[in-house]
Length: 90
Image (spheres, rainbow, N blue to C red):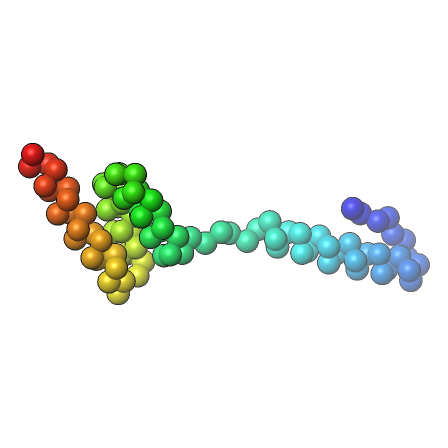
């Protein structure tokens, strides 16, 4: 909502209010949503639960790229690779 203004003192207050409102709205819409390692692990777990093992492995590899010291991702990836090799051998 833009309030019209002129050079009167009260209108300068309206101008300042409009500026801060538009500044805060633009900052709120411009902030990017960051995907955390926790989010990626959650998506990998969902892929595993849905038996999409290849997608889960890709997601765990992404976790390892972003957080190389994440032991959980290495453990799950090792289990997934074993499961995938067993299903391919049958």
